[in-house]
Length: 161
Image 1 (cartoon, rainbow, N blue to C red):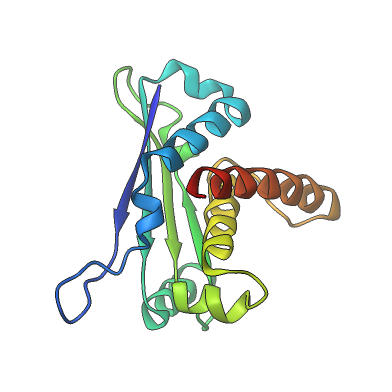
Image 2 (tube, rainbow, N blue to C red; image 1 turned 120 degrees about the horizontal axis):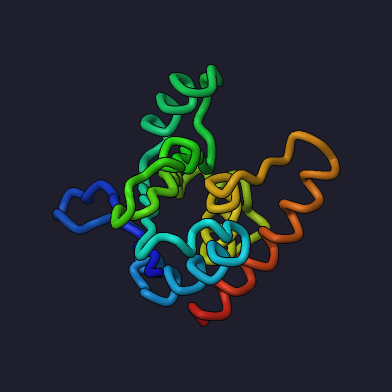
C-alpha cells in the first residue's frame, strides 16, 4: 500500500506556495504509511491511501472552526476524518483518510516553546491520529493519543533532520 499526502497552500504575493517545504519530502508519507499500517490494519486491503494537508491563514481556519465545530476562533489544526465514509469503498479505490488543515501562524502562536519544524510535525502527527480515530476526550484516550503522537512526531523529525 502506498500513502500519498497531497499538499495545498495559498500562494504569496510573488506566486510562491506558502506550504511548509518539509512536508513535500516523500519520507513524510513513508513514516505516516508505517503508522497507518500499524494503527489501522484494515488499510492492508487497499493498494493506496490518501491524506490531504492544507495550510491556510488564520481567518480561513477560523471560518472552518466556526462552521464545523461552532468555535468562532482561529486554531492551530483541524482534522476531517473520512474513514467511516470510505469503509465501504469498492476494491481498487484508494482509502481516503481525510483532510488535515494547519494554520502556521496559529501553530507558532500556540506553541512558542517549539521550533517551527517541531510544532509542524506535532500538528501533523496529532491530526493524522484523529484521522485514524484517536481522540483525547477522556484521560485514558488522551494518554494513549499523546504517547503515539509523540512517537510519530519524533519519527517525522528524525527523517527531516
